Length: 204
Image (cartoon, rainbow, N blue to C red; front, side, top):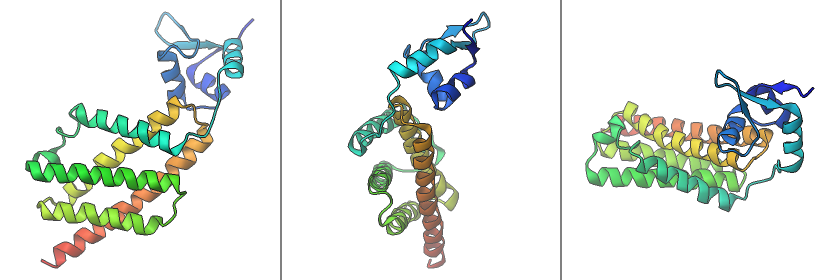
């Protein structure tokens, strides 16, 4: 008799994150059965057969990833998420345009970091952090709002990369390594932002 698997058990069999199995199930990519209570259940035989015939883990090309991530970021911003941010509401139209440019510089810096395996990462992180800090200072945002602005763009960008990796079926080990490096890089940007903001305020 074929064994029934929970969502997390199916994820272990496939070697992916449970959220990836949920996404594939909802899109009709992966065979799934629903219990009367609405829980997802999977037949082990069906999952094994699907893995043999459909699952093709691969390296995602940096250029393709940049295109897909850029599309997802634009979608997030167009849905009004940026307009809902309290720090963004404090800015005039010119300042908002400049902050959207900062979002692009972070996007290109992070994608370049991924594509080049972190070459010249320290200088890149410092430059982006300086840009975010000087922009916040110029538009009279406090350091909390400066950090919130950076985190908005950072989190939108990384969540978009996660979505692209899941849909491309990138192996979970590769995904975890990439995200670890991305968070390390953006943490360095945040440190640069705070150090620069402190320097600019002390020079007033």
